[in-house]
Length: 393
Image (tube, rainbow, N blue to C red; front, side, top):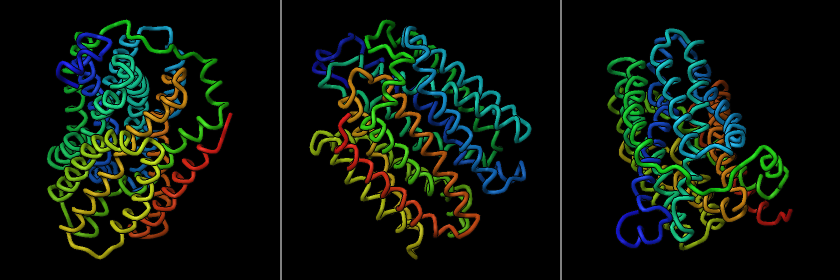
C-alpha cells in the first residue's frame, strides 16, 4: 500500500507504515505459533515423544488460541486498539521466552498456552485495525498486508526454525522468535497510531454473533478448510523423512517452497476477490484442495515433482484468507472485530482439529492415508459455503 493513491484513500497519514508494522507483528506471531511444525522431529527425539504427543504441542496452542480469542477481544473492546495489541505482543513474548527455557514437556505445553493467549489478543485486533486504517476501497489490500505477515512466516520463519532446531536444538528456534518480537515491539509503539476507529466489540455483541447461523456457518469455513490443510501440513516433515529419506536440509527446502506458495497465495487471494467475489473464490479453492492433497500424499513421484505439488498446494491453500476475511466483513460490518476474532480462532481451531485428525490417522494407517482424509474435510468446507449462502437470519 504505497504511492499517492494509497495515501489519498487512507484514513491516517501514515497508514502504510502502520499496516506493514501490523504485518510484521503477525509475522512473529505466525512463526511462534507454527515453528513447532519445523522442529517436530527434534522435539520428539529430545523429549522422547510419540507422534501424537508431539502433535499435541500444536493442538494445545491452537485450542488455547481458539478458546481465548473471541472472549479476550470482546472483553478488551473499550480499550484503545494499539494498547491491546501491545499487551498481546508482550504476553506472546513472555510465553515464547518460557518456551525457550522449558526443560520438560509439561513446561513446554504450559508455555505454549501462554504464548497462544498473547497471539489470540494480537492477530484479530491487528486485522480489525488494518481495516480501520483505510477506506473501504482499500480494505482487501489492507487485509492482505496485515495477514501477509502470517504467510511470510511460512517462508522465512518456519524453515529457519526447522534449520535451527536440527542444527542447534529446538530451544534455539524459540530464542530467535523472542529476539525478533523484541525488535518489533518498539516499532508497534512508534508507527501504529492510537485512536483507530473500528466498531467496539462487547460481550453482548459476541453472543449476538454466536446466535446468527449464517455468520457462524461462514466462520466454520475457516475451521474446516484449515483442518483439512493441517491434517497434512502438521506431519509434512516426518512424511518427507520417511518417504524420501530427507534430512534437515531437504525438509527445510520443502518448507521454503511451501512458504513461497503461501506468500504468493496471499497475493492471489486479493486478486480472486476482485475477479470472482469472495464466495466463488472459496468454492474454487476448496475444490483444489480436494484434488491436490491426495495427489501429494499418495502419488508415486520423485522429489522434484513432490516439490512442485507442494508449491501448487500451498498456493491454493493460502489464497483463502483474503477472500474469507473480506466475506466476513461484508456479511457483518457492524461485527467486524468479533468476526475477525472468531475467524482467527477458527484458523487455530482448524489447525488443532487437523493435527488431531492427522495424529489419529497415523495411529491406524500410513502417511498416504492423510491425503484422502484431508480431502474429506475439505469437502465439508465446500458444503459450508453453499449452506451459508442459503441461510437467512
